[in-house]
Length: 200
Image (cartoon, rainbow, N blue to C red; front, side, top):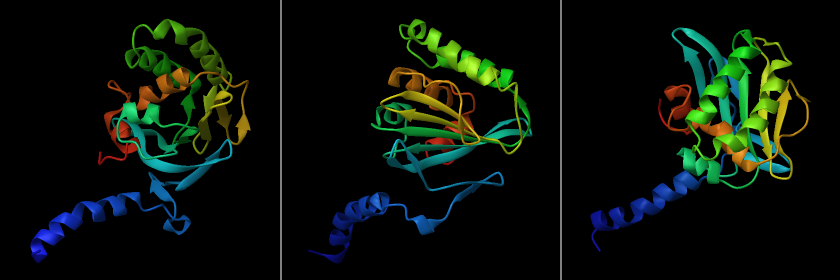
């Protein structure tokens, strides 16, 4: 076998090994817009990998940086929702924001990115999440929000380390929430690309 031919045959295997290389703790956190995201997170007793990060911005205003944690890498919205096990969407606020802005974004984005037949089934749970967010009145620069999915419980809404309200059940609801960020009609295309691990 010639050297060139052998190189071509081995290249796919080498690429796979590189992609499959586990993220080491000493790889250090990922810095985005001045804030850091750890390479790993632990939700419901399961270690998750940082899939990607991005920033939600309107014009020159940066609202928050976000990181998506999954049990396996995912590069599309369908893959993200299909990945089994716990998940985490972490938001790190970069300025003070009214909670009403978050609620509005979710109420617009969820039906835009969900199958029409599913939307009525999400309504009551969307109201519960909206109430939890609205109770904050305002989130502040530096606040840390985790939107965790625990398979046995559902969506757990955590602000600065404190769980708010009761868990909202259903992987269908959590999938609909994630599609607001990474679906076909996301709130921010660059943020979507970053969370999916693509160059924005």
